[in-house]
Length: 277
Image: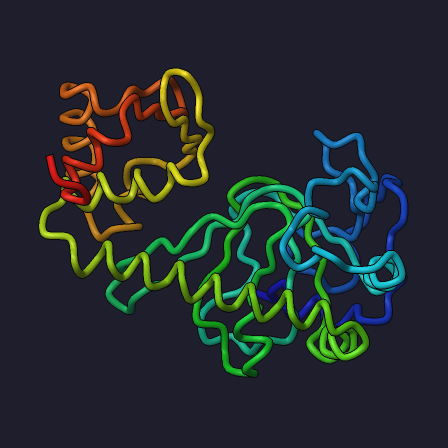
């Protein structure tokens, strides 16, 4: 199977797509399910529309109009369906990827078949940045969770862009620091939490920092299965299901479809041992 990382490198000189024009072919030598058309069925926007969500990503903050225009001229958008592998561990980092639409699961896998979930990438995030900067093989596997629109920039072209635009260098350095911080937070959850219930409670508290605050509490949108939640913190699906049920019985968490509502953050913090009673 050929991966998107290889595909983006082969198409380094391909023209960018400035409009959403239907295209029935699978471009070049792409892997099955990857097409050069930048259109997604649910999207009515051009990929480079000024109001596109990806523009609010950390990498694009404070970039000048000239830099943004150059980025768009270099970009080669691709689409892929859900559950497609973008790159895998030990694969050479030929390209860096920018997620425009959709979500991508980031995982680490062991030879025994165990999997650790590292996070879900959202529009505006960069995939494979650390590997591209160091030149070392990817340490993680990236798989599309839903249909995605993605830009792939070959490593050399990406570096040339950073050299021409120091703000992009600064943003990239900040992103690498944020990756390190998230890694430390996850290690703290995995290694320093005493029980399964405390691990799960602390994970929900961590997610709540980016959730929506309402009069009813902190709302967390969670599209993960109980098995995938368990992969964040080294628990089985059954253990996650049992502890979530306990949280609901103790009125710490209310579930409405794919939304979790934490009515009292302080109560959950006490339960997790992060504050004194």
